[in-house]
Length: 248
Image 1 (cartoon, helix red, strand yellow):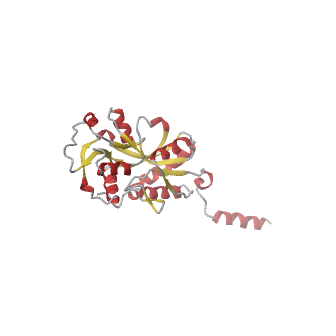
Image 2 (cartoon, one colour):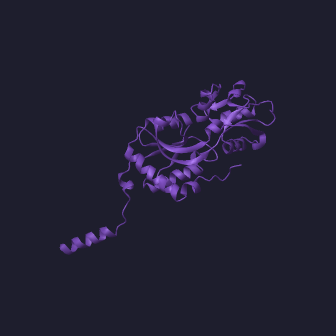
Image 3 (cartoon, helix red, strand yellow):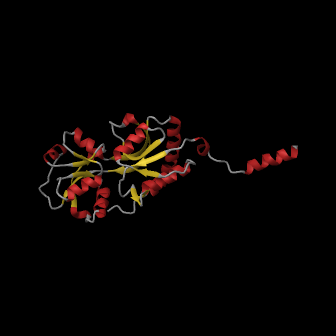
């Protein structure tokens, strides 16, 4: 019997040891809004760099999971109100600061106002001068919230594809956008990226986009995911995975 016990003990020592996250970490739900060229949908499934990052992060935590693409307002609401729901690629602002646990920054973000190239009359030298023009922006998006705080009226839409169509069809005069994202949206709509041109950079919105949990998520889960993400930042995995194939 003693010999058998020794054999069992030795066999157990040879078995691979699962990381604590694989057995102890709660199941995590990952959500994000569509944000080409980073967060894409192909055949009703998440694709692109953000999906690759989330897949790698979830595997590192020992709990493989896929990213779900939702409208921005719903993605924010689920992360804010449901425990263990992580939202990818949101801007860290003063208004959002206390509503989320900020896991780690993963992407640089810059924004400008865009107009049609054939509308040189749409001119603004400052943000305050934008108020004279018709502007579309996504509901609850950081760009929309920024313009509204500056006293600039915005026609709010459900997603940025709608705003891009309105710009192309002349229903609005200008819109705020991340350059690479707008250019790819235009390609998807069958238009050349040079159909539009940047007219005013919004330097106040230059920042980094984060992974974040709402305050309903326990700190132990936040800490585990933060540690995994920071390790991926340190070894270059985040930069490698978040490099889009199309940025022009």
